[in-house]
Image 1: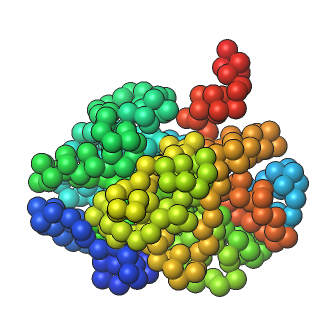
Image 2: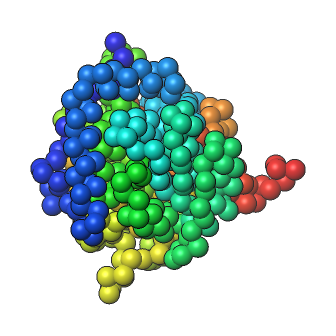
Amino acid sequence: MIATFTPSPPILAGSRFGAYGGQYVPETIVPALAELEQGYRQALADSTFVEHLQSVLRHYVGRPTPLYEAARFAQRVGGGPVWLKREDLAHTGAHKINNAIGQGLLAQRMGKRRIIAETGAGQHGVATATVCAMLGLACVVYMGEEDTRRQALNVYRMRLLGAEVRPVSAGTRTLKDAINEAFRDWVTGIESSYYLIGSAVGPHPYPEIVRTFQSIISQEARAQALTAIGHLPHRVVACVGGGSNAVGSFAAFLEDACVELVGVEAGGRGPGLGDNAATLGAGRPGVLHGAHSYVLQDSGGQIGATHSISAGLDYPGVGPEHAHLKDSRRVRYHAVEDVGALDAFFALTESEGIMPALEPAHALAWVQANRHPGVTLVTLSGRGDKDIHTVASASGRQEYLA
C-alpha cells in the first residue's frame, strides 16, 4: 500500500533543530509567526484539512509519483541498481508543488487572500502561482534579475498563471535577494498577506512547515521501495540548496540506521568563496533570513557571493535541520561542480530519455562518481525543461536550439 501524506513531527526541540533554527527577526514579524504557527498546528490537527490536502495531492498534483529503476543509467555508471523518485512527474514539473499546495490551503484557511513568494529556479514561483490560480488568491513572486534571465520560461509561466513577477536588482540579483524583498513586502502587509516560503529556511516555524509538506516524498518512497525492491534502499541521495527536496527525501528514513543519507550541494566553479554554493561544506554557523544555520560568509561575517550553474542551488545558506543533520553525522554532505552536473544531465537524458533539472543532476553526478554495490535511491526533484538554454550555452551546443 502506497503511503499518503501523514503529518509527522520533525526532530525539533521548541523552535530549533539541535543548536539551529530559532527566530532572528524584527519584533514586527513575531506576532505573524505566532499566528502562522497556531494556524499550522490547528490545521494539522483538523482531520478535514488533512483529508482535503491528501485529496488535492492525489487528484491535482498526481501523487504518488512513481519510483523508477534507471537500469541503463546504472549500467552506464557501474555499481548497483539506481532508482529514481520521480518528482519531475508531479504537476508543474517539480517537488515544489507539495509545499505550495500545503501552505496555499493553510493560507486560505487562515483567511489570507494575498500570497507572497520568492523563487530562484522558478519552480517554486510556478508552483505558488499555480496554487493561487486554483484557489483564487492574488500572487506576487520576487525573483532575482539574474534568475529571471536564466529562467525566462518559468517567468512566462508564472505570468500566464496570473502572478505578478517582481524582478530584484539588489545584491547578487539571485535567490538571497529575492527572499530579502519578499520579507520586506510581508512586513508591510502582514494582516492580509501570507509569505509562502519555498525552501526549508527562514524563521521558525517555516523550516518545520516546509519539511512537513515535503515529507510526502520519503513517505511514498519508503513504502514504494519495500513493495518494488523488497527492502529499503542502501542509500538515499538528494541535491541541497536551501534544502526542501532533500529534507523531504530524508524524513521517513531518518530512523532507519541501515539507510545512508547523502546531500549534494553545488560546487560551482571551485572551492573559493563566490565560486560555489556549498554552504555545509564551506560555510560556518551564522544567521541568515531569520534562522541560525550554516552560512557562506567572509572573514568579516558578511554574506558571501555564490555561484552555481543551477539557479535553485544558488543560495548562501541552508535549512537549519540540515545543519543539525550534518553536525549529528546522520547525513553526509558533499559538493559537485558545474561540469559534473552538466555531464550527469546528459548521462540521464541519453540513457533513460529522462531530462533532469540541473539541481538533481548534481545528485546524479555524485552517484556517477561514487559507485555502490547496493541500491541507490535518487530524488529527481524536477525536470530539465527550464534549463535548456543554460545547458546549451554551458555545453556549447547552441545549435540544438536552431
